[in-house]
Length: 447
Image (cartoon, rainbow, N blue to C red; front, side):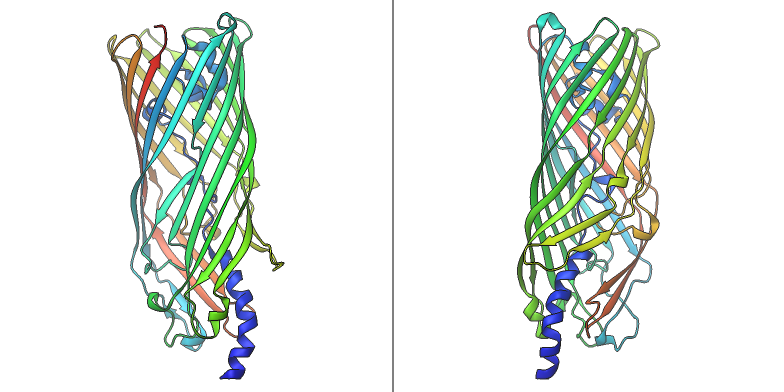
């Protein structure tokens, strides 16, 4: 037995580090982009936001739209996001030395996640130079994730606890060129922090690994990056606006560590911490939007967006101790969204709105995983605004995103290249939706 432990100890340490390639990485799906920024955009299903220029959120969607607002403003909002993720088992299996190489059903309960996460936003702006120049500040969370399954669910070797938090602070500037054209832009100072946890199987457990004999792998990291966004708006009349907006992609190298724990027997030597840098890339985004007032009360909007997800072709994890990089291919493709929305002025105090949007997923079937079981989805939004006074307005919005049912068939090699080489096959089917309930308070100075 001593000989076996010695022969396994050194490669098992390397193999345990390689298990980080099984971890979910929190920037690997379109579902991580949070499209709703304030109750107005939520009610519109985020359609028409690059051209509507209805409130302070235009500082995020298209800063050029600030020139269409009246007077200095302060908008404070919160978008409460709830993801209901359900993944049923379609025959997941595992093969380890403990099963004598035979394929055995993978134990564990169904994958369920239900939880609500508040996502605040703040928009401040003021005109200068007789209203031709606008200065603004937008504080938002463009990407985010909180997804937690039970520790004993069947897909735990792919993921079971994922968190991503981003905070984007963007000073903005807008300029009215003439009565028909405006331009604007901002510098994006964005912070990202991720915590990613998965289970590690015990390949020596007789009959196959179980939740009771699992180890744990926890990857953490954070980083800053700087990007930019720029927009153009054509407003030939109060009835017509066309907005074009571009947001640059971001590249993170999340500095943190990998902690491996709870491994037993010959694998116990792999328990411990390793300093890491995890490289991920977020897409650039281009939006084209039209707002057209059909009557003094009714306004229609349409929008098309493009996401450059092909920048996210892999997850690369570097170790400060000189261990080889770990790479997990993603195979993401560029995507688009398309949608229609409408806004109706019911009275001098009430405005109603609604929208629908089709959102294409960048994930490929061969690489879809459980960290976010992403697929094409449709957004359906409704909302309303109430003018308390000439200066104060309250907004409320709700949107539901319904994912197309999709299959997961992911084979995970474990301890590859060692005597403990094993394989986990996670096979499931998704049935999921995501809801956002938004509240906003808008105040106009000097109204």
